[in-house]
Structure formats: structure tokens, C-alpha cells
Image (tube, rainbow, N blue to C red; front, side):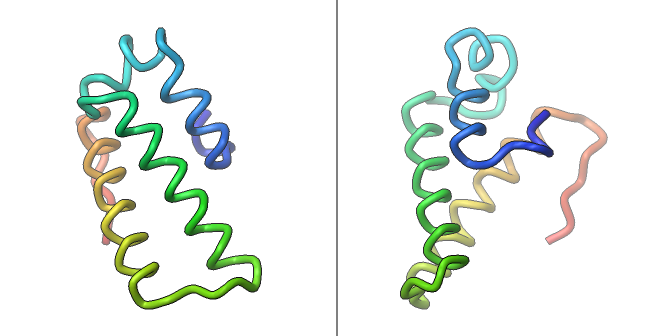
Amino acid sequence: MLDHADYKHYELIMCHDEHFEAVFAVAYEDVDALRHMIARLGQLRARSHHGRTFTAEDYRELATLWRAMEVGFECLIDDVVIDS
């Protein structure tokens, strides 16, 4: 399902109380921190793809946040390895 979602959908799916407790709490400790990370990733993605200023600091933040998301995704599925 996440393959077809956008950042707002990630938040709605992953941070939903039942979904977070049943699935995502294993990989992400705090639902509010996850919600903030997803929102920030969405902002950075929009900035990078829609003709807005995108700085080297934005790129570093995007890379750091996305690595944190990847670590969580890898915790959810035993046989998944994300090539970086």
C-alpha cells in the first residue's frame, strides 16, 4: 500500500493509532516523531521538485531523514535490504 502513497498518505496510514500500534511501533518508537519526520520529508520533497530553493542543508536533512525512514522500513520486513 505504501508503494502507491504520497507523504500525506504515509502520515495517515503509518500514524493512524491502530496501524501504528499493530505494525509501525516495532520500527518507530514515537508516533509524533514519525509524524513530524514524514511531514518534514514531504516539505523537502515539495521544495526539491517544485522550483523552490533547495539548499545543501536541505539535501543533508533530506538524506538524514530518509535514512531514518529506511532503517524503520528494514525493521518491518526481515528479508528487505534497501540499497543506498
